[in-house]
Length: 539
Picture: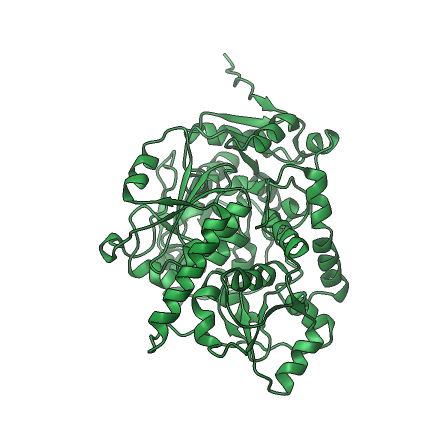
């Protein structure tokens, strides 16, 4: 007797739009890889690739009764992903009727690139507040003549190290209001805020203005892209960072920053929470609450409130769709200074989120240490393991092709380093990949830590009928034991579609691509108007 799975419910484009307009909780999930996602998606779609559901979804969609709508663009990923979500305990899972094409056919607006809600909001802020900016040539002239100017880079430190404006100092996002007075103590000092493109420099500049900083402040117009398009050189490998060492003026500067940040948060309608609210929120079965510590990862590791996860404030505002894919959810922010949470919350409130900041925190509240635990799905079948030393011996002694090593890591990690002879495989493309890999008697799966590899083992065994093992500790343990490595695109069994190459993340993008990216950003406000679901307001 053949058992037929019941059909999955469907929700229309109109259903999703109505939920967004009514500010109901909904997670519109695109289960394709990041590159195809970046080519076309609805405004509030969140990218959660089908191959990573077991290790990401419990953190990103914490409430199991959340209304989830899953789609692809005809690749056949959506229905299996929806059934996986049901198996993982989610009770309100539906397919988007017609998938992405159905959204198009119903007149839904289509956006490109990633982190689009934040980027489009940044453009709206500039349009409504006329955020001041200076062109690259003018900023370079200020630097060259050693004018009284400070350049603050609002990106993550790793992005800053890749390429930066000469003399620029790394002060990521929400750190700006907290640190700017120490970095530019003279009110006459011109402050320039930059990022790679436009969004974080606009938000950073407007944050300093909103918080009442006395200095003249301007964004570097079009960021490092604008700098390169002006024919100017960037630095690489810079390491200038804001100082965390206290000075005689630190206490007063922080107090002034905290007062300004609180006033901005109040204007934006940020709500206030205390410890008793956190307990009440945890008991609400019909609401999703994200608990976010917006300080630096180093501070978070040294001590944080139990149950909170770490996303630095600037990153949270820039990548809200990643941290909180459930639109309409509640966000609760915490820090230990009264600045970073309030400034981050002020922007999130303007972006239409129900956002709270925790008040009255004491040092004893930050009792948890280390990284927040990662909640992953239980394995359906027990894994069989092989140590790096055992695998190395087997690969030496066996005939070539007897054992196939499948690396389920990101394509970036694979090209940086992998086990000699290993194949790059996307879990979402597993069946197609195995058709291109010569059939072997044994398969060994790995990734960075072998966490994701464990979930692919049963599928590889089912497809191949062969013996399947998992590498203990993953490739990082192989590396730590000093075993041989390969580099580059030596064996790609899957296309490199797991990551979208941003036109602003390196210095080798074609000028046409960088200019096209800027032109796209300039058009986002008009797209927001056509879409009509954003709910943004600018104070």
